[in-house]
Structure formats: structure tokens, C-alpha cells
Figure 1 (cartoon, rainbow, N blue to C red):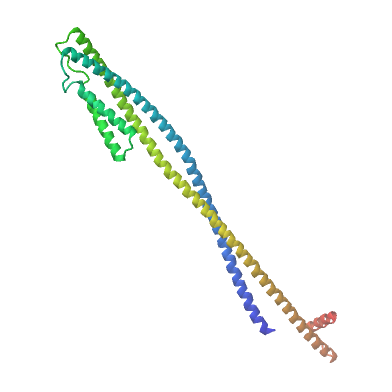
Figure 2 (figure 1 turned 135 degrees about the vertical axis):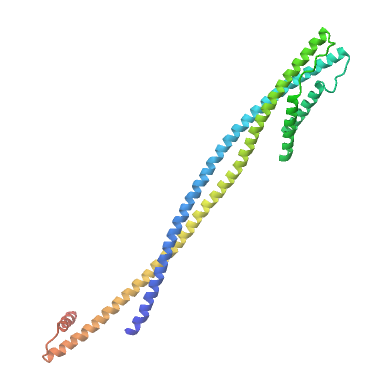
Length: 302
């Protein structure tokens, strides 16, 4: 029996060590699953937060775009009013020139008119042409320069001394038309600047929207990845639990085998002690308490 006990003891120790390692790995899996799940909830919350931000940015873009469109409509209205007064001033100037029999000099209203025409052409280019950032910046800078020059250019010309009553009436109407044209132009320039600010705001918000969408997509991917990692660790945990059950069953088998071996040894030892008691009893010797118990137990078994 002693020969069998050593290998049995070694097997039990080996299996017990394996069981401890499996249980340690199970604890690691449980912690990893919880950490992955916690990270998944954090990424989910971040994703939902970013997805909530996107509609808000959309609404703000819509508000800014509507405001810009309203301003552009006002620009167009002021432009039409300005052009109407400009055309009226030109027609009246031509009438006055015919009456005076003279052509306009280079320093008269035609110079202001040319600058305003150039400003309108730049406006049209900026509104209808796809420009690069540098090209649009150059156009806006030229528009601002023209606007400053136009604002500093007198809208009236010195009153000629040789005007008849009819000529003077035309001259006063010309000054009135020029003045109104300048007022509409200045209003238009102010509104253009305000519209430009709204347009820049729309561009900036649109640029903010794209990273928000991208980050929300990345957050969702991380959320899914964390859940996948948790599922993989859960599968690993199930495998380890199966191993734990197998190892525990092996240990139970060894324990039962040991118990049976121990009982067999105790039985053999008891029978030997009982046989020794019978021999002493027959020879009239006094029996020990253990010998009496062995004799009683073996007789009871028989």
C-alpha cells in the first residue's frame, strides 16, 4: 500500500496546483470583464453625448444660414436701390451735359460710378464663383479697399456757375440721386460685412460638425470593441469554469480513493489487533483497552 500512496499524493498535489492556477485565471477574467464593461459604458456615454451635439450644431448652422440669407436679401435690396439711384443720376447727368454741351471730366461722378461698378462686379464674383480661401480673401480685401475709397469720395460736384434754371434743377436732382445712391451703398456695405460674419460662422460650425461626427463614430467603435473583449473574456471564463469542475472532480476521486484505502488499512490493522487479543485471551493474559475494542468490533463485523 505504501508504494501506491506516493504517486497518489503527487497526483493530488499536481491537480490542486492546477486548480489554484485556474481559479486565479478566473479571477483575472472576472476583473477584465468588469473593466471592459465599464469602459464600454464610458464610450457609449461619450458617443451619445457627441450624437446629441450634432443636432445642436445643425440647428445653430441653420439659424446662422437663415440669418445670412436674410442679410444677403437685404444686400440685394440695397444694391437694387443704389443702382436705381445711380442710373437716375447718370441719366440726369447726361441730360445736363447735353444742355451744357460738355462731356464729363475724369474727376466727376463717373469716377465714383466706375468704382461702384467694380465693387458690384467683385460682389457678383464672390457670391457666384467657387474660390479658394486665398482668392476669396483677396476679393474681400479689394472690396473693403473700394468701400473705403467710395466712402471718402464726395458724392457731389462743385456747382457750375453757368447753370440756367433748368440746368440747376437737374443739378440738384443729380446731387439728390448721388446722395441716396451713396446712402444705399454704405448700408449695403455694412450689411455685407454682417453677412460675411454669419457666413464665416456657418463655415466654422460646419467644420466643427465633421470632427464631431468622426469622434462619435470612433467612440461607437470603441464601445463595440470593449463589448467584444468582454464577450471573449466571458467565453474564456466559461472554459476555465469547465476546467475547474473537471479538476475538482479529479480531486474528489482521489479523496474517495484515499478514504477507501484508509478504511481498508484500518480494517486490516483492527483484524490483526483482534487476532492478537484472542491469542492473549487464550493464554490468560490481560487485554488492553484497544485490544478489547478491536475484539468487539471484529466480532460485531462477523
